[in-house]
Image (cartoon, one colour):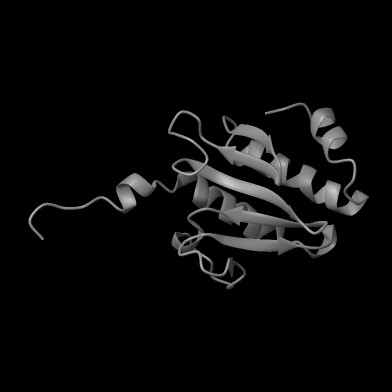
Length: 134
């Protein structure tokens, strides 16, 4: 993962609260998926397991900036457990889901960790694997 100072400097335009949320998400990702590849993109941060593929096939999550607010996005979020119904449909996308994150104190951190863990283990190649004969 990139040095924290690089992230803080690149996203210095965020409010202190939003930056704290972003940095805490990085801590969780580092715990759950210590080998995650982290990339700064135009809309935020992207995390994936580079040993299995790229941001789509081996995506862990994305921390996207939408109008100054943060969205924790999951490319295949429709296929991970969401017992409290927190993940939102991204309008027109079949599988992508996101969780809007407003204030640090209001983030459901336990759920966030479970989403990141579940999505880091999700393998679309085995999930969508066709079987012979059926």
